[in-house]
Length: 71
View 1 (spheres, rainbow, N blue to C red):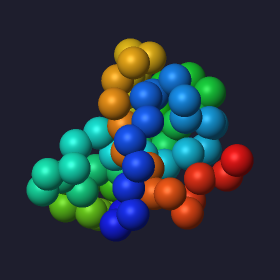
View 2: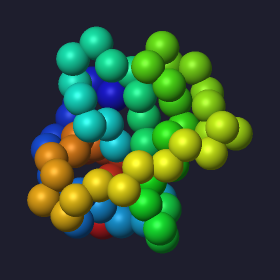
View 3: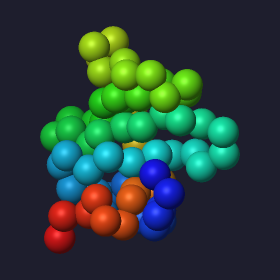
View 4: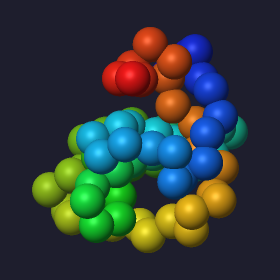
C-alpha cells in the first residue's frame, strides 16, 4: 500500500481493505458488514483464517490505497 489516502472508518465500503497504523505495521483489514476482518498480520502474513475482527469507531482514521477504491 504505497499510494495511501486517509479516510474515516464510516467512509469505507464493505469489502474495502485498509490499515490503521502506517508505521512499521503490516496489518491489513477488510471491512465486513459487521466489523472488519484482519487479513494480514503485523508481519504481512495472511491470517484471515484466524477470524480476528476489530470494531472501529466511526470517526477512526484509516488509510486505503487510492487506486483500490471502488467509487
